[in-house]
Image (cartoon, rainbow, N blue to C red; front, side, top):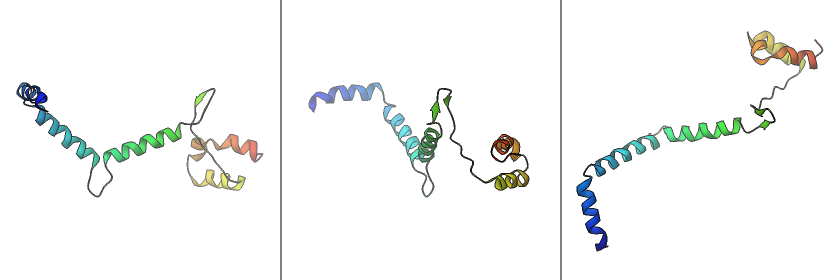
Length: 103
């Protein structure tokens, strides 16, 4: 233990701001990790990372693709297309209806 006393004292003299910098970083990481009753920034960062990995885990020879599944009867697809403006363009329902519903 006494062998480290002299180098530690020299380090403390050479870098007096080291303790203050460590304290600032400690406060910063505490702020990221704890937000009282709310979810912390690190919680949401980990959640977004997990969800992002789940979204892009399916791939084939063309690369990664987003998993999507549209399930419904022809009546449901027609109802969806008529009730939500622009849904036919966004969901690309026309090819699905032509292949599955014959019209």
